[in-house]
Amino acid sequence: MKTLYSQLPAIDSLLRDPALQPLLAQTGTAFTTHQLRAMQQEAREHIQQHQTLPAWHANWPQEALRRAARQQQSALRPVFNLTGTVLHTNLGRAQLSDRAIEAVVNCLRQPVTLEYALDEAARGHRDNAVSALLCELTGAEAACIVNNNAAAVLLMLAALAPGREVIVSRGELVEIGGAFRIPDVMRQAGCTLVEVGTTNRTHLKDYRAAIAENSGLLMKVHTSNYQIQGFTHAVTEAELVELGEAYQLPVITDLGSGSLIDMTGFGLPAEPMPQQLIAAGVSLVSFSGDKLLGGPQAGIIIGKKALIEQLQSHPLKRALRVDKMTLAALEATLQLYRQPETLREVLPTLRLLTRSSQDILQQAERVLPPLAQRYSADFSLAIAACSSQIGSGSLPVERIPSYAITFTPRDGRGSHLNHLSQRWRSLARPVIGRIQEGKLWLDLRCLDDETALIQALVA
Ligand SMILES: *Cc1c(COP(=O)(O)O)cnc(C)c1O
Image 1 (spheres, rainbow, N blue to C red):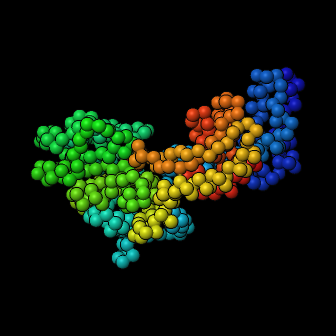
Image 2: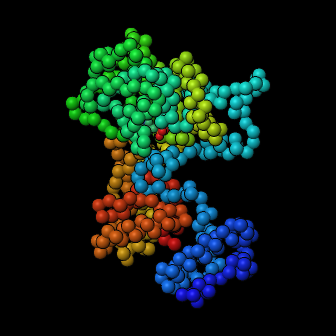
Image 3: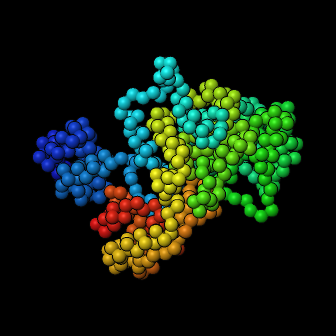
């Protein structure tokens, strides 16, 4: 044992080792020393537990370089999203358009008029540019931008109905993954939730009966990640607006995804559009920037000027406001919507969602042969029809026809699939598929660079 410990090299001598000089030049003495100390500690623990030296003892500089390379990788690694979910929350949702990316880079390199009105050489408001665009595109009177749609809902409730009752249908008490649940957000905002109707059916008279002295808002929540089917009834926004007007109660809607264009025009399932709700008279509508809109993470609130002003002057707005990168990306994304006929080409989210299954099949036929050559000893590969989904709770039950390359272990053992997917996840650019029905599926809907994928999987 003692002799094993004494074989561990001293940090000083390692730092003088010519093989370590490139690492020292690249990362400095402090980082390298820290790295070597950690290795020394690990080696001691290894000796204590196994009474042997760790395998990497044979080449300390090489191991230090390997570890440093791994530690310097970004925690946000680009991946191949072959899960079949286009707006994958865990993979960063929308891929931004080139215009949005350029806008972000631009606003990072030099000072910008974030809160500066050039006409008056005075203080402007950071939401102004984007607000004007949103009003132009949706017909709303004003807009307010916050960090995400969850923040938008919180701000609407906290600013408009603190200490008051908010009336919501039982069928719309949504949970959106993580800790976002309508009843909890209500509590956080200091509002009292008043549930009306039943899970499957809520009528206008239910809302009317619940209106009382302390009512503050009528609220609709888009049931974006589930669907209640069968014997159902929900009150439309327009009906609710009429009721709200009679009792002077604003109607707010959490739309979740929302789409500024008619998705059916692109052969996709219908999704409610914020501008329709504004036209129906809803006071405030909130939706996400990085769902179907195809922009950066943001919460967008549009609606009546007087109410938006209340949001803008609430202290929470300061805590939830977005930075210049988000505003730049959002502005550039919204500008693309001025020209809906080119949207499919310039907005990656829409391009990926509208790729024809024929196009994906042809790509699968090109990608299959090189992969088969590499993997067919252990797996049988095939092209199979599959269904992509939009993701992020948008249009949950709708599926878009697509094609996948499937890998089935020749000996039928599922452990091979886990092993394979694990190996692909450890690649320089990880490949993320899904395991289902005893196969590993690579849905090619979101595959932009097939050459890079082949290279990654065949190397
Ligand atoms: C997605 C969603 C949210 C949360 O939006 P984020 O932008 O992810 O914060 C809230 N409500 C509904 C109905 C949603 O679909």
